Amino acid sequence: MDLDQLAALRTPEGSAALAAATEVAGGDPLAAAAALRSAGVPAGLAAAALTQAELRRRAVGKFGPAAAGMFLTRAGLEQATRGVVAARRADRLRAAGVRTLADLGCGLGADALAAARAGIRVYGVEADPVTAAMAAANAEAAGLADVFTVECGDATAFDVSAVDAAFCDPARRRAGTGRRIFDPNAYSPPWDFVTALAERVPHTVVKVAPGLDHALIPAGAEAEWVSVGGDLVEAALWCGRLAEVPRRATVLKEGPPVNAFCIAGGPCNHPTPCDHPAGRQPACHQLTGSGAEEATVGPVRRYVHDPDPAVVRAHLVAELAGELDATLADPSIAYLYADAPGATPFARCLEVTDVLPFSLKRLRALLRERGVGRVEILKRGSALEPERLRRDLRLAGPQAASLVLTRVAGAPTVLVCRPVPDPLAQEAAAG
Image (cartoon, rainbow, N blue to C red; front, side):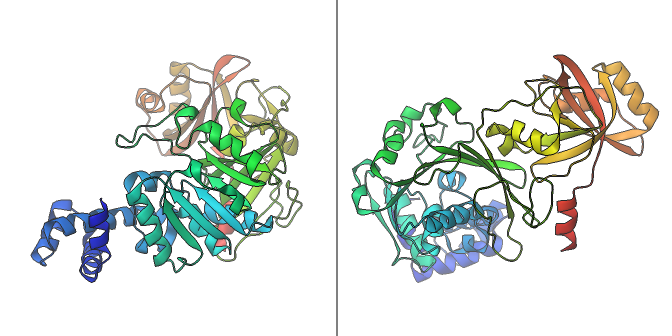
């Protein structure tokens, strides 16, 4: 995609080509291209329209219905914030009193659009000319061009004294190749500029990779990890006046907001109330703490809880253990064991039926005796490959089981389990 192709897509002929491409997107690409050519769409415009239609189809999972009117790039879509996460971040900024925001490296504008919808005036800066033009087009398509404007330029040169908040999502892929960048100093903008923003702007938020080394977290910043539907999607650093707690795990999933004991409307482990949009939007569950506590170690017990990845990455397993009256069976493995199921939005619960020192022969014999023909395999602290183990077990039978490959007091161990019904999922399905 270049600027000329983008301009062509925004003409009446381009809009017609996009509409035609949308009708055939998701099928055989050769047949789709032939259909547009037979309709009289020039080859270059047809290719651009088909690319956009396919990207919009993929983007629905991130942006919902708004994806239908957006202009996208593959790299930009991959790095863009999911709509529900961006909306929640915008609401928090608005609640903190933010009225003007600089989005430094705004990409396609996902976060900026969410902030603008929340009533915040956004000034976007993007170094890539095509991406900047797409962000401006996305603002226009959303009817927000008067509150979200974009300039193509160097984010490090923007005058942040003109705004009361800054958001930065530094590029973590190399331009042209799309390869991931693991050295923060090679980000764009570079890490030293990003972390220095908090000293210049009273409200600063930085989106970072979920695998961020905790040693890189600036002193005094709040580090938050966010999961959606069980998938860890991002981390963010809330700096300056926005920092409330050292560590936060935010879990977004279907169902009503509850506390760690799954009590709807019960006290939430968060310093401020959790407000959620009406309808089928994911509920927001938050666990906070220092990130420095250590959970007690004990034996395997009747129930094992598999913490959400946001809880694990935020180093809040000990806080969750305290809520569930649970212990670890190995100090380095984040499975929690308890005598009661203790349903929680922050972990999945399984009932342990058997505990075996790992032995393929013994495990195969036990599963055959139980008539188990289907297994799900979870693992932490095990080098075994689940799919290879599944083949080696040579299962047959009508029953199902869950296998947890782990370590107990340093020893390779397998837990044979059965799932405990999730009350949140049941309530969401019923509602």
